[in-house]
Image 1 (cartoon, helix red, strand yellow):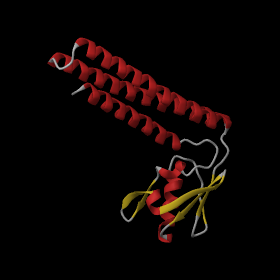
Image 2 (cartoon, helix red, strand yellow):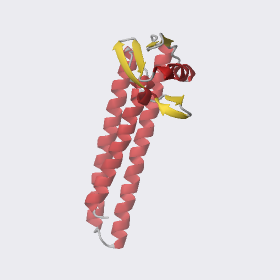
Image 3 (tube, helix red, strand yellow):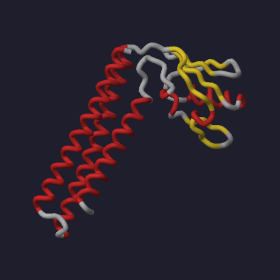
Image 4 (cartoon, one colour):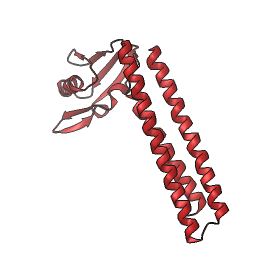
Length: 186
């Protein structure tokens, strides 16, 4: 695998790790209503678990309220049941056409738990990035062993991979810092 491919592959996989982390952060409550809080919910409808986004439009018209509008009014009870059964701790209110979820204010303890969860997720993302670095370094070593890379090229490839690693770890740290500030300020 040529140097360019090693670096492109590593960069692509590191970017994916950051994207996964970014997506995980949308599910963390900040005290403000955010449609991302219920995006990951699956609703048992028509005999199979279906993402809530496929069954309803989800919006946050107010800072402390999420509104779920089912496309098919017949699924409203199933959606309501899924929200209640989730570990989000929400109490949805339905009027038969729309489900309203009032987001309660976060207590200090809950804020601290959310903050530590953000740090856990950030560390998982950084570990994923480091695993990509390990794989890229291994690929460079293999190329050196096969004779397609010189010792100097191998070393410079590893240095570039390390720079990518630092860049993507910094992105994760920045995202975590911003989300933690949102949670703590709420």
